[in-house]
Image 1 (cartoon, rainbow, N blue to C red):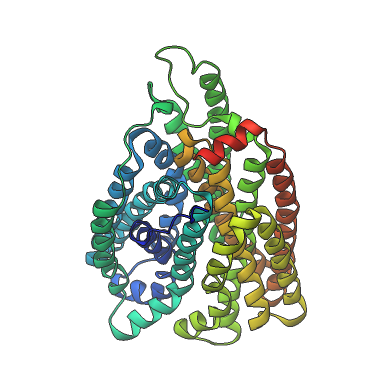
Image 2: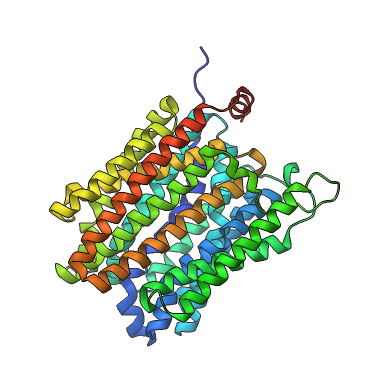
Length: 468
């Protein structure tokens, strides 16, 4: 019997380090808000964009980043995005004014949007064996979960020993190491023949503007309220832009076979695959429920229990570090069962964990259940998206999934943050926990639907997947 391929660690390390930095900077800045405000004299509007501008641009440019990776080569786009992220981190670390720090944070978000989908596509190319790829994705995702969870604690330690600028300067040596490892150990990918042809500038512009508008509306809704003219206007612009975007992409897809025709940025036919559509929806729902609750739980620890930034980060560890437990389990389980069985169980575990908050509050057991459910669901959903994506659209498919997750994150924080404002922190926390449980339960039902869809693939489709 031929032994299974071994997991090459050097490409995985290079790709994981880049994603580690992206996820670390989602949360590491939040604990530095008071110090940044005092150091730079930043007002409320500037602080809003220093914290949320990063994720807004990240969500808005993901589709563009995924499409460019499919066209120009994922290694080239990954290294370009990582270089931009590191350079933007230096701008943030040296910022002498709120405007300079906001500009640096927006540039970080742009670099992240190009880096993340290319990273996943390179994982697919580096590990063609499905079992090995599942192990690689589990470890890659564990690094991200560790970074996201460690962000508040790392930020607190850096603030205690140095100052807020250290949260950005630390990205430079790690980013340089990731670039060096990528150049030496990650194989390049050139332009893909499946996307040759003229580009789709209208679709790219509509996608960027629409997603930026929607993400911006959700980020602003928490502070300004859902009826703010700015929020309503941005949401209307985003919805209208996405409607036109879908119409344009459908028209281009119908004519893409003609010689010299423009190639759509996004092929709407991707969503005819029920497993793909269900998994993308799961990505939105788990981010809405989990990260929305993470936000209000942080408020609970700081405002109700009086914990400081470092103590809050440590209190959240039972939840945010579950990736360290989930990754090794999934690396052995998913190759045997496929992604949907553990995904379904994890989503219902997360729903049960949130329901216990109504009785016990954010106890370590409840935190662990929801963290394990979210991490397991996210990792298996990532595997499922890669398994169901056409090879010529690997970057775009993973970008779609990450866009759904980012929008779910923004929606959860905005919605649950509004509930704590209008209902009070304790009641708002309970209502948010109930909504999070519903989101995870609906995700579990969708996962079952995706599981059914994945098992009814044609023999040709299964043969194509086995050949990747």
